[in-house]
Length: 252
Image 1: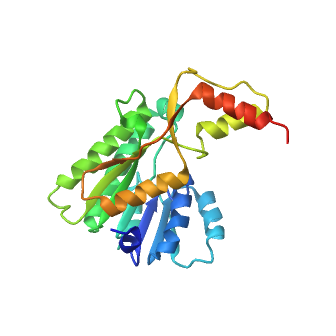
Image 2: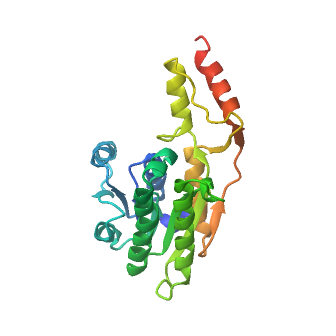
Image 3: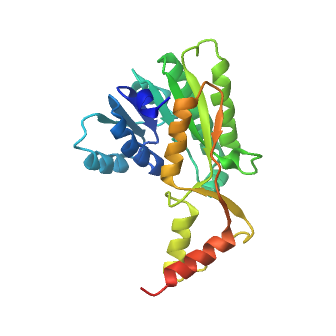
């Protein structure tokens, strides 16, 4: 099915909608002519910036709230047809330091989204996951693995007969806030040492556009209970750091 047929004239909710992914998917949703796009996030400053950027589009609405607060997500969910659940604690070091907070956002928050979506008879919920959910060794990966489990298990609930729930799983999104490439860039340009835990570490990389295209593919294809994974190139962190150092130090 063509994604425009799925999105056109629908009400779409994006949790975590002021982040890098949310910002990109909103731009890509607009040409599909949804009836309304709802941006849900707890960051009021980013809300302000996006409201200024998209003020010419009256079909975009903004909801300040937190997925941890079921009542706030319930208000934003009323009448919604499609949910893209991107709200998360995603930074590995911060999740390690604040494990309980990561559980509240990534696990309890996801359950709140599920419950509200099923109560509203939402057509589809597509949740954003990560390659770190595969055989997880850190708190971020563990909470995302649990998010995947509860999203997929929700398809078995007797009260979710209309609501289709699925996940997409991808790696490091190039240039997204808090990711390794902006970090390395800052360190190189400011002559700081590049922080590499292990030069042999590898990461799967994809662009923001590729990430959104994967989400749209899942939206069109999901029947309930799937995890969609895109084939992605991987890179050694040593090679990435070396290539960035050469590129950024190249004379104009």
